[in-house]
View 1 (cartoon, rainbow, N blue to C red):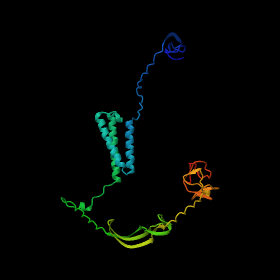
View 2 (view 1 turned 30 degrees about the vertical axis):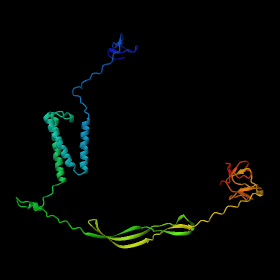
View 3 (view 1 turned 120 degrees about the vertical axis):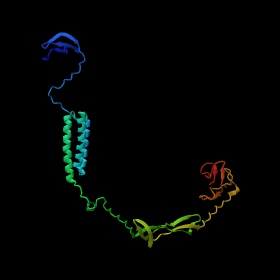
View 4 (view 1 turned 180 degrees about the horizontal axis):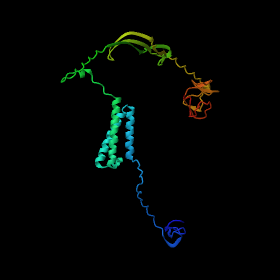
Length: 313
């Protein structure tokens, strides 16, 4: 270790400091203290101090650059440069009176005078260049020749032209509604209504002669009509046919031997080889009208739904 004499962290015991004589370690140890912040060393005489741009400088430079760029696009670069130089002259004058404007980097009157001189040069250059690019137009001869104490004759007012009327032809296509009719149809039962022909609207083209004045319509006249599509009427058929009467019920056969089956009550169910409900689809040979109540065995299978009542449908 080649450090000068002083207290250093003990390499043998953590958390302790030990005296270094410059040649070797001494025997004294002390607890390690919190290191003090390093002292600020003033810059050496004659050393150059580096200056950094602050936020205000960056904002001002950005604003000036944006103004110059926009004015260059609009053809007023030199006029804007002269204006910026005038602002700089005002700032330099303030700094010259006060001695400095630290926020803008002007720290003494010498710098303020330099700012004023540079701004004055820019005003002269910018103003001259702008005058060369945009010369002042000469005064009209009428104004130059006007006698002293009198004003030039004012231009006479131009009379407002009378708006002319414009006539054009305009065509419009309109819809023709279809008619609705009803007819009596003997092939359809009474109470039924059927649309036998669907209605279709037609089309008609109207031609107008339109007169406008200053873009506003003032008159319209119908000069022609043309039906391009004929409408088709809607036909509704109303039934007039009477439905056929229902067939008469099948005759009920007389019970053979004059007796009724005791398994049924309510109507006489004859005793036969087979008995069906009258008006049904059975083929007999015997029939019975309903309803019939099953009180015993349903020997003829008349109660199909098993609710105890036969021939009830």
